[in-house]
Length: 120
Length: 214
Image 1: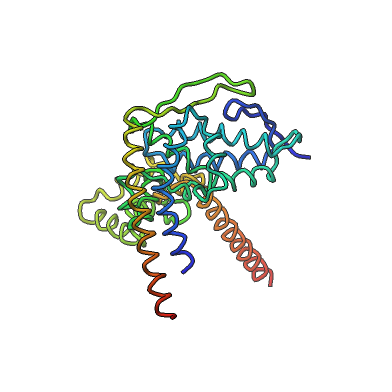
Image 2: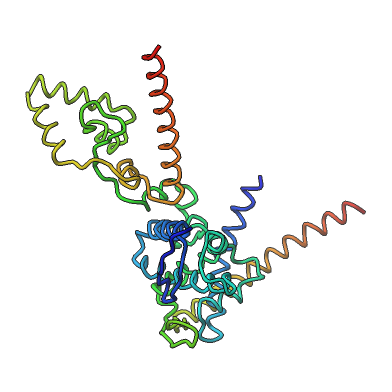
């Protein structure tokens, strides 16, 4: 039972993670470790390794691009930036998210309301 | 006393203990294997190396040498490649059905080896059986014997293959022979199997020895 729950949670996180990563990068250029620290605390990322293949995939799809910037502490760093295509993709994703969010809340409220009425 | 290595991980220099070094090596290999089909494989591995280097710097807290302790901490944060769960979107639908299938296909390609662990002459037949995924090499052996009597070329074919096909010597050879991907877990399993087998052999020898004596 518990394993099944974890599976479903992982599936949910997958789609939402993409939305959040794009959204963080759309606020301005971002270094992967910054993205991780912003995602931390949220339940979105379980292991950090998840981020790197995702960034790679979004870059290949033309939604992100990166450039190298010198760093004081170590080797040059990769900074990611959102492309025009990426912004459009993000807006679209966000709309879908809002619709989904609304529908889920509505359904859930309806259910708890019915339950309350039954209790009375 | 412990041997250490000097390494360059994602552009940062580190000193690392022998055991920790080989574990990190295996971990990175398993990531490489997991993504070997994606075209950004090297880039992903590089990015992960950079992040691991940053994490090592955080976790060393002024200590000088990376030991298994830091390696375990950092790998727990980065996660196993199987847990990354970041397959391309097109694959997601199939992914839930075919987890096992994708895992094997992401691994090393199957290679033909002679199998030294199950041999009658030189392990050619059992190597072929492993290559085609046949459980019992007896069928291939029968085929060769049949070829020997009918066409007469069975023996020649066997000798040629003996000469040309390499023997599976290392752990990763043995995994490639069965078409299993080289991951940390597979290698660990294989090593375990070998140790038990070795233990069995020693038991047998000592039994033989005592029975001869008696």
